[in-house]
Image (cartoon, rainbow over all chains, first blue to last red; front, top):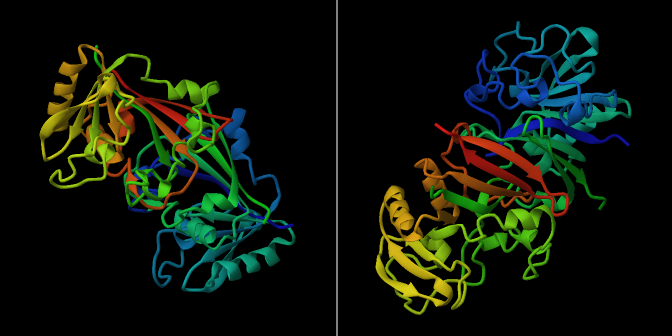
Length: 213
Length: 213
């Protein structure tokens, strides 16, 4: 069965998945790289951790079981409104780490962008249900990752479309930004939640598994 | 040295220390007893847990080291404005669990209420610094607990008066209520933070220790 996954979704203690404002230099705004240091042994731009709980949780969903990705437009890039910068090909260079079709949610559809390594960005408009169905078709029976940002994940949670969600709670207080949790009162009742802290990085990994209904 | 402590301060994943609205039947509003079940083995109104990490963390600050308590008026009771209900003597009955002087923050000072077991409620107006100084005098060299609610703790955090804070992160989403974290961007830099999860209750205990400056 093809599941909808959220993995390595890092938020601050006060629930923000990105800071503000998003710029070309700072995709995560004033959060900088602080939300993701746990994956890089505390070193911005450093090597990924290779051992222990953070490495293990960092690998969830990156073992070939994901066949398509969905992301919000703000995760793809800083442009808003009509696409004026045709040169922009995402934050990740010519060989993005997805290696699958990637469905970018936008009110302004445009032709797909084929990248190296198997990643193709498709620019689609639709409800979460519709876009998930499209991504499932493209995934060929594999899982679909809801890649973010926070408002995209929130939208899929609100529509009850997420089967498995891995949230990483980073003990910092951003104070402002885009919240993962806003408007999601009570959704924990749909999930079994497993919690484990990392003594190395200090983050807490929460795994939400959707209950059989 | 007399420290200012926050202990067993339970919040939801989205940062709320109480739900809404506060009523006589529901001091924590729509949160009910969900924020504090970890301390009662999951049973509302049940016995306190007596073993394991939750019992140990539940005992922090209740070993005779606290000589005075500070609380917000809404923790003392549901009245607002001028004191119209002179019968109200707090949520805790005639022998409250504090057994020390308790300083209730209010814009409407009134004579103290002497209870059984050593608890006396003093109703005081003042800045966090002033009230902490008063409480320290009353504590006779022992620690002072900032007992809550969330906006009172937030006020003392903002004024950088908290030496040790134990926060309990409960994996529920309240969606609304009084936030502990609002307006506290960056305060983690003042603290060393230790995190440990409880496999029994599923909560995460965070201990904030103020850094030597």
